[in-house]
Figure 1 (cartoon, helix red, strand yellow):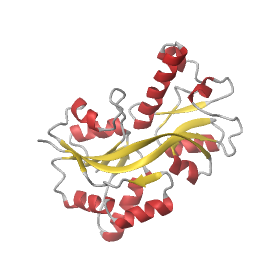
Figure 2 (spheres, one colour; figure 1 turned 120 degrees about the horizontal axis):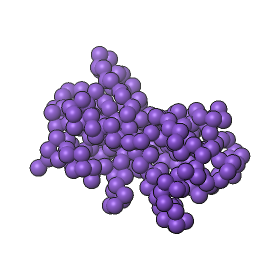
Figure 3 (tube, rainbow, N blue to C red; figure 1 turned 180 degrees about the vertical axis):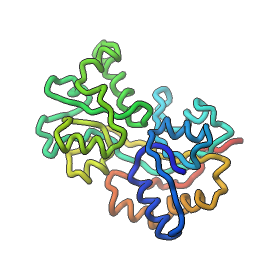
Figure 4 (cartoon, helix red, strand yellow; figure 1 turned 45 degrees about the vertical axis):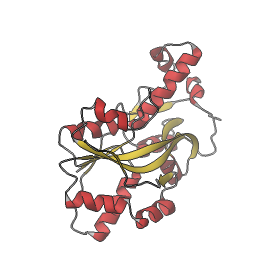
Length: 242
């Protein structure tokens, strides 16, 4: 069972797993990074895809193992880097440039769901902007049209922009490319894999990791998923219980 953040890289891993082991079955539930941490904590998932940025340290994922009480319950495995940024209509007709433009009267934003790594990144950046403008966080977000409108996946963000339901949303380059939309880079993030200590020995989990570390996966990512870069240290254990 895979529960966590939505990523097209996971769909590709599963496709390659099915190619090598046709009988394998993986349930994939997209609930965001926080949901992934919680699912591992509750014993509902074998693997969670996570990309939570810690505002204080500026590091991804590792600080949250302790925050969610998972120090003796999970292993964190290095995955890949994803390019996050603003997704806007083809040709960027409104000349959108960055976070401060979200305050413009003519810009309709579509947000990501609370608990997702992308939402965490958005709110960190908006808190920074609020401080710069001398505003409270709520005061700033109340000026953003669509801040309270949430989408659960990167594809839903791109679809909203494509069909004119929003002017801009934050998502991964991979999806912007697929929908043939413009992309304005904001951050490179670490998308890693949290694995329950009870599941690490499972054959299916080992199969998942072998695909993640494979040359085949790396080549397919380069060919199909622009904006995702398999890390040089992919598969490395970033954290394990002492």
